[in-house]
Image 1: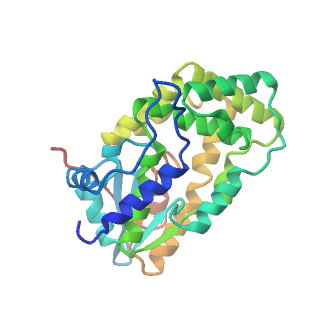
Image 2: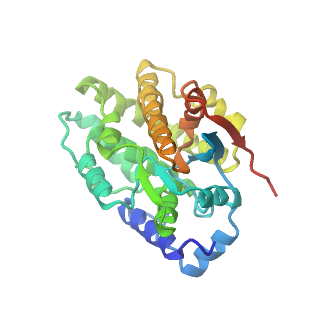
Image 3: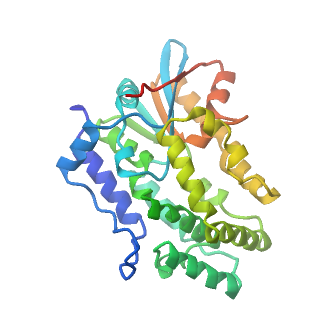
Length: 321
C-alpha cells in the first residue's frame, strides 16, 4: 500500500461527498451527512479490505490489461480495493474510468450538463409526488429542482439507497480515480460528460413524463430501493452467476421504455468503451479499465467485445476467507 498516497483517498472522498446531496437535518430517520474518515479509520479500512466486484484479465500482443466491474453506490467498508484488485492496479500504468471525477474540467462539464434547462415542464401532480419522494429519501427538493426531470428522478433513485447505508459518496469509481492520481498513473475518461448526460434524456415530453411516472411508481412501492440493495449485495459478494441473471430478477425490462433505456445505458455505450480500451492497449498501455458492473454482462458485454477483438479474456475469481 505504500505506493499509494493516503491523501488521495481522502481527497476524492471529500470531493464526491461535497457533491452529494445532504440529508434533511430535521428528520431523525435520515442518515447523517457523509464526511471523510480520519486517516486512522481510512488506513484500518484499507488494511482490512477484501475483494468485491468482478475482474477480468485481457491479454493481447504480449501485454495484459484488466477489466473491473464497479458499483456507483456502496458502503464505506466496500470502497477500498482488496488484494486482488490492488495487484491488478499495480500492474497497470493507465486507469480508465467512465469519467475521471478528479479532473476539474470533467467535473465542471458534468455539473453544467446536469443543470442544463429542460424543455419539459412536469404536471403539478408529478411535481407534488417528486417533492414527497424527495422528502422520503432525505433530499431537499430545492437542491435538485433546477435539474432536468430525468436527472431529478435519477438522483432520487440513487439516493433511495442511503437508508440502507448505500452512498454515492462511497462510489468505487471515485476511489479508483484517487488511487490512479495518487500513484501518478495515467488516468483517462472513456466517455464524455455530455454523452452521459444525453443518454438520460428522453426523446420527447411524453416519454419524459412517462419515465418520471414509472420511476416514481417504483420508488413509492419500495421496489427501487430493494433493487439497489440486491444489486449491492450481489456486487459485494462477487456473485457472477446472479448478476448474469440480472434481466430475470430486476423487473426492469417489462416495458418498451425500460428496454430502450437499458439499451441506451448499456448496449449502445459498451462498443465505444471497448474501442477506447482497445486503442489504449494497442498504444502499448497496460490498462485497468473500471466501469459499472452491468457493462460486463449480457450479449454486448465489454469482456465479450474484447474477445471479439482478439483478446484472451480470463475471469479472475476472488478467494474468499
